Amino acid sequence: MIGLDYSADQLRRARTRTDGPLMRGDATALPFPDASFDTAVTMWISTDVEDFGGVVREAARVLRPGGVLVVYGVHPCFNGPHMFFNEDGSRLVHPTYRQRGWHDESPFWGEDGIRRRVGMHHVPLADFLNAFLIPSLSIERFEEPDGPEVPHALAVRARRTS
Image 1 (cartoon, helix red, strand yellow):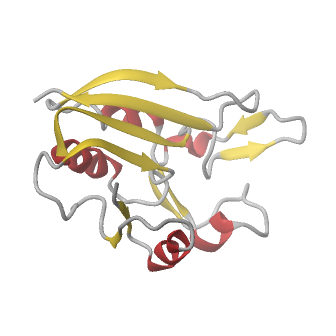
Image 2 (spheres, one colour; image 1 turned 60 degrees about the vertical axis):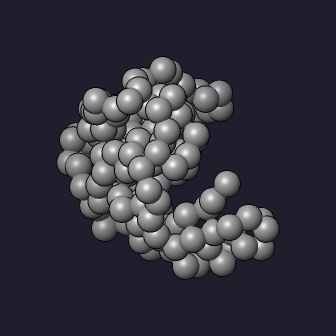
Image 3 (cartoon, rainbow, N blue to C red; image 1 turned 180 degrees about the vertical axis):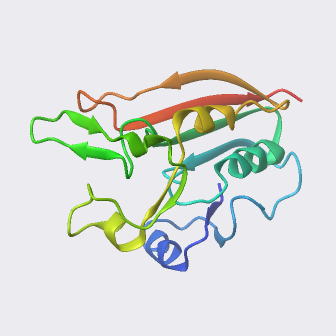
């Protein structure tokens, strides 16, 4: 297992939790040869990268034929700069949902929190799903993991076909 992150700060934190190898790198240009791994996992990154499709393509590239890609992260429909979280657990979707790309701020983000400090990249659901429609991948499953009434996360399992 090899951990990779673009953020040196995140890698410093990870080093306090694992003895495994960690590398600084760009998920859209992985520093590994083709067909290097049986499994690739991305977690919670779709809102932090400019090219989510590029991340999926690179992950597929480094998988061996038959290898599995698991993507787990923010549900594009129910999180983002377009969402208002009501006290009763419901959510209100603002018409800015279709505004893909980087958002430095949102009227719905509180005064504190990570998104207020660093912003986020919004990937609408169609763009998120279309990222997996590449010739070398076969989608096996989508999952909205248990949790709040309105899903917070979305998981995808795909397999490298060639």
